[in-house]
Length: 411
Image (cartoon, rainbow, N blue to C red):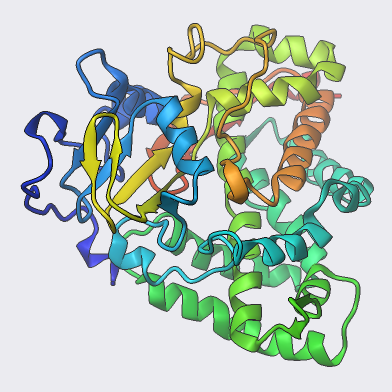
């Protein structure tokens, strides 16, 4: 599907109770410009909205409105399949990356392969690399007195690290990032199939080379692994490496924008971290709770009852992470950042068998960014020349986070 069907509405099926139908488009939620991404999604949790609703937008799908249902959807692959996780369905059926579209037990050996390079012990070996890249970028920025945070840091830092870990040319990063953007934030100009094929075409000669001349980079390790005693095929290698490119070149970039805007607008929180950098490691968990950005789906595997209504086999249910972590049934004053909030399990990194394989690398990149930025630029604010712009999608983002600071305040 060329995302031409994006936002299209369908007729409401007869079995959907009228009181469950809402007018909500995940790519353009009401209140996005006025209330920001999380405020717009939080609107769904009004007292008169059922815990499970159905929208006719984007092909028609259910939405889990409360945290308990979001976590249930992620954790139970016997009822909620990962075989199609993208909305609209037409795009999801062309999303072929593995093992994210697999259910256990097929998923399990592939996840074990990913853990070879993304497990905590392995990622810890790259602490110096991650710190070095952050320091270099921030030192290049600090004496300017201003920056576009996404353009000058967030779109460079995680991409550069990932390109190094995969053993790919740094200059190819922007091209690959542009492809990934079409997958995670479709705008109707490139179909899921075409974007996927662009990734596969790029990876084709890379995979051939790493089979012939394997090294210690992530791609070499992954594609030279075995799955249940057999070698990985070329299509499998493309789909596996494509998945980690999508994760590594997108999510952290977008999350960091929300965090830096929050710190720019809230000097008391920013100064708390600048003066007590040892708190950053634990505070990152609260920032993740407050600013989640992922909304992926599951496919109903069989007719089931959920929240008092019937979901039919093959229907899609959206599991927005923000409707878990911002649920006032789960957290007191959930829209407030509380550095002392007691931690509890949530779906910031997903859940169940598909909990984010790259979470250790992502967490490390976020922690290092805050540590090194606040060490050098402890005082900054939002520039008033451009208003931030929100984009709601499968992986949401914020653009136009322009920061300004007095050069004499840098360290």
